[in-house]
Length: 350
Image (cartoon, rainbow, N blue to C red; front, side, top):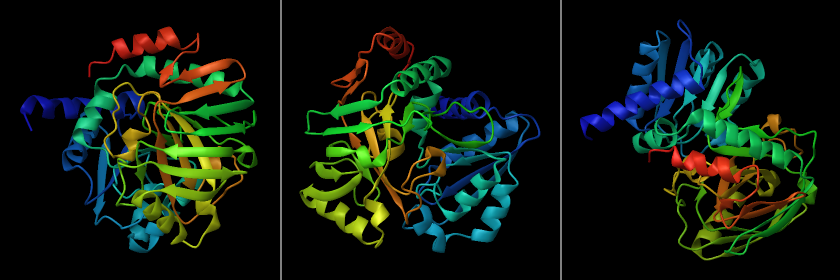
């Protein structure tokens, strides 16, 4: 990789730690990674922590074949948990994520660590989705998007691929503006606003036409995966070989919660593109993402724990709330969002 681009990776890692994670001098920054992680990203983040006069610690191990709690048997549980519980900041670069695993649960229960999920982050993605993004303007956009969604009790989402699903929101449940780090807790990459609708009100058809991951064999989809949803539970899966593989993977856990809708999100990172890496795919501008399986307690939903978790992408979404259209054919058209969104895109140097 050219030296200039290597410099951009370091600059982006520094921006991640300083502007997003608010790393302070003397803090312990634990970085977790596996053999599927991008080593240049790991090394740049260690260097960035040193430049901020923090104390970096890298935990690196073979990539588990599963994610979430299904990864538990493959993890060095005791030393991993001990290190993470004593961190100030935890940056996860694992390809097979620790998110929703038992160590993650226990660290989050403790309530003292600032954690960010950057699973499978590679060098190019780090530069495009953080380094070249106007972070304050993106967070402003996300907050407005969350506010508009918070005011919508009933919503409908459609896509050109055939998604047509309706649901209701609970005004008491939180809506997260990811990457807006304000203290201990779990955070995600900027460019996403997510929440858990009232599960039993989710009805209709969800068509994944962007990507799905896990299982490992999937990623960018050549053929769509069609999910029929009744009262928040997937009752039928249709499609070609991708759909059959997806259904087989869900059934392999022998856990009915793997078929339940855990959360929903908007994608709004102007630097994100569809790559097959779910971390980036679910932030593609104008896409929506649906999560199935394990549901973090922070969503305050009704699904609870599951043996694993998966996410799927619906491209070019149209979202209508109580106040009218929020998204239309993949573009943010709400009056409060349109101009700010255009300015955000114009300020992105991708």
